[in-house]
Length: 457
Image 1 (spheres, rainbow, N blue to C red):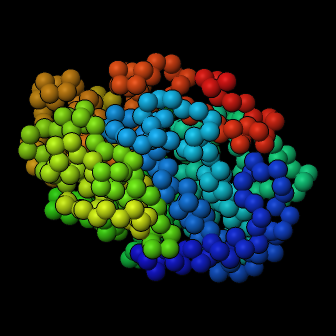
Image 2: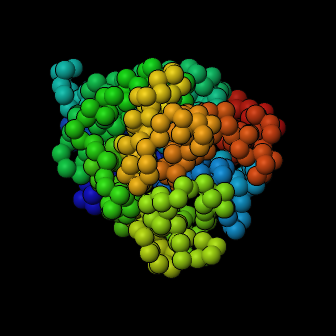
């Protein structure tokens, strides 16, 4: 993992050394960077793609939790700033998580790569050419997917910024049109990315399985359940992926690169993230488990002692990403990889899709594969209904436990239209317009064609 990430960073630096700006919303043109002049060889093309992964590292180092967990019901906080604003639903245009610049850096670098990689290869059927473009399109798709889920309609471009003649100040594009492009990008990646790069690279680079996993998430967001099942089946049929044992459950996150991992953003001692500060810094982490979350476990769930510090009456430490018993009070940044997609997520999404189509037996088989690993008895339709209301609700509860703190809970509440129902008693969320984030004031001030999201005007 460390060698792979260092190679990614090194390649990224080659690209960055000639660039004075990456964001499509910056006023200053990228006058010192000639992408056409940079992309001369296959190694240049690979370095350009690694530069996109480098931007992913900056993007998700803390925001994966702020965007995906901070406004949901599994966390509590004692910290000011973003943790408090998100938990109390007092978002403003100056909070850090309202800044989308890093996502647009990912998009900018991807657009350069997608445009200029073809010029390196004479043969349009070259496997390397098409898998590099596939990785670039998948990474662009991930960035846009976060943008539309967090902010809704956003500025949209598929072109790199290279000339003052280009329209720099882009207005918003309808999120559904952006989602259409996200699907196109991921379908391309599913077709042309390598099925395997070998070893550790299968987890930190986008493979076909990675593209299919993200595509499953996108289809579920759009409530296209039949398409989600088809994409998920490609993941489940992929021999790269299998569930780890419960004894290795924490190791998926503390060590990374497990057989259950489909795509993770790689970090090391140089490129670090905020995982420790977010979750594990003794009594001073950004987040700790809410009482609602702790009370939601079934008796005998083997994951419970692996998720938070069970030795404390009022837990202030989440163990999940560092291992049971973790007790390092250091505030140093973390070198853990951030797992964005894993097999349990896809299994449960497929189960949910089946349930929403009335295919409860298929749904329960998938649900029970996750419950069994956790030491819980399998559910039939009657037990699911008695315990949770129906099969779909049982699956959503299982997602809240299995995938806790990984950056899924808020998006699950939003896409299932449960955000207001769940969060109103907790923080007063009541207006559907308030579900989106505000656009950061820096973006509003730079771009005269950009209109603040309605709730925050």
